Image 1: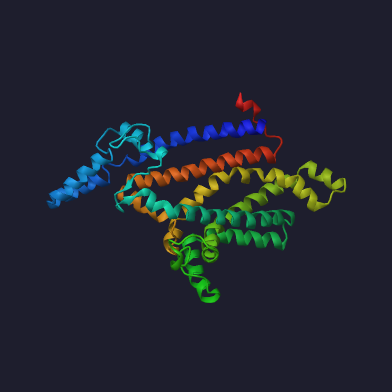
Image 2 (image 1 turned 120 degrees about the horizontal axis):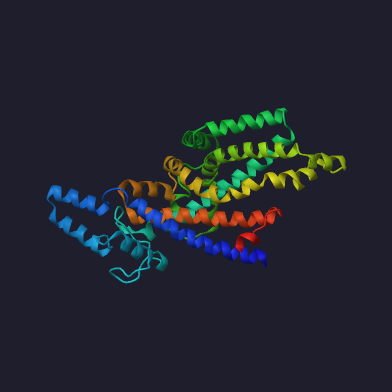
Length: 342
């Protein structure tokens, strides 16, 4: 019952935080002088194209960009009626992309779930590689296993992602016949999900998953090794060994549970950091994720498109943080939240 109350409490806290984040995103996006339409109007006036100026002015009124900033925010969120009534984010209207001249929902529709799939695969790769190697390096400290894992870890941290992407891009196709670029075969784009399409996506995920997850796995492995070594030097470990507990069981039951806490807490930061960190990789590998779209939207001041993508990343962060908080309570009985709820 306490866990359920805490989960409900964290959910409403997440909604309140998302509301505050939406204000910050909207303000920051509007900090640079002008916007997409005002810049376009200035260019059209300089070239004497009056018809284009009239169209741009119409779009400014159509999307309430001629109103005050607080009113623009309320209309964008759907808290205040705009030119066509209540049509904002909470009503499912993500706005219009002036750069691509299409609704934002059409631009990000296919890329959102592909972005989530790519980065979830990278996170699974990070944990699948970092956990066993970090524990093994700590358990076999100052042996060739420890030194080898440290060398691999430092190599992963030192190699730029875009360079690793180019290397795997070439050698993966040459020696292993891995597909070049994209997240699926072009023949499956726009088609409903099928077994063949799923297989194509999984094969295309191999290189991006390795590239995006390598630096994260290397950093996590080094941190887990350090945390495990700190726990292995504590008296309770010596007591457990003296009582005859098997080393493998002792590692999993005591030091690992304590050392693993920071990595559960990192779930909230890991997914959005990979989304933002994979922009250059997405450009190099030609991935249909939201990273390149966000880059274009920010450069052209396409405010509705960039604001929605940033809100999506913020939502991922908050959901990940909420999940990590709940998992921490389940993982470590020393953590209590009853006092915080009061």
